Amino acid sequence: MANQKPAIATPLRTKAIVEAYDLNFKKSLGQNFLTNLTLLQKMVAVAEIGPDDDVIEIGPGIGALTEQLAQKARRVLALEVDQRLLPVLAETLADYQNITVLHQDILAANLAELVEQYLPDHRQIKVVANLPYYITSPIIKSLLQQPVVLSVIVVMMQKEVAERLAAEPRTKAYGALSVLVQYQRKVELALNVPKTSFVPQPKVDSAVIKLSQPIQEYPQLIFPAAFSRVVQGCFLHRRKNLKNNLQSLCGKDETTKTKILASLEYLQILPTSRPEELTISQFIELTNLLGKNNLL
Image (tube, rainbow, N blue to C red):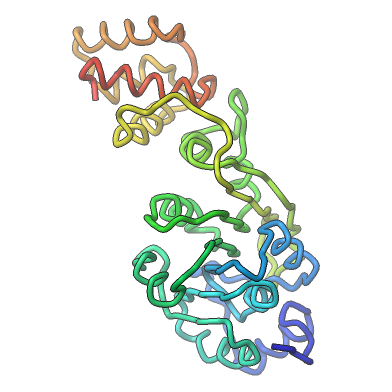
């Protein structure tokens, strides 16, 4: 698998590939190619890729990150939605026999079937990707809902979104996305990525987030199907207090209002509290109690 050419991520090689294929960057697909080799290597290191790991990459672009992953992993399965880039990847990654590139949209793909077909007898699957800004949240939610066991997810995204994912209660960035992701995964803001690392240069900085298996134990969630609805309902209007948001979610008749107030009192949560004041455990307890009181 030795490759005597300069790494794809180097500015000169990236420029040569873009010019050779006359690539026009698609804003609609959020295409920005990373030209900072050191950062890519650090990203691979954050994911702790080893020879027994199979890796799924989303949006390989021209193969800069894919190449670095292939040098460490057992196999790499790269899913690219832009058909124009398939012949580019076939050339740039030709020296690597452990890479499979598919024309696939991660939001439409059946990941379980793809893993069964292309990553059989896998030991551990990790996801490493530079995500398009415009669909970062849907991709994260999709990955967390997959039946495939993903041991680690390391993804680059807009810094603002990364800060929301990692945010603590009682902070401005803390919201529904923070709660829903942190309930399922340990979230670590691993790397900051300046916008100057990309071609074309985006308007904002990026960051790398690491989502690993949770280590904190939360109360048992009795109504898991309703949890997302409750959390999103509580944050629907950030300027409104919990009582008003819960009334919008559950109903505004007098019986429902009384049950909501009784639930909050039981949990020792002030009705005038803002949603960002609640911890993940409190959101779980609130969901459980609303469900028991037939408010969901």
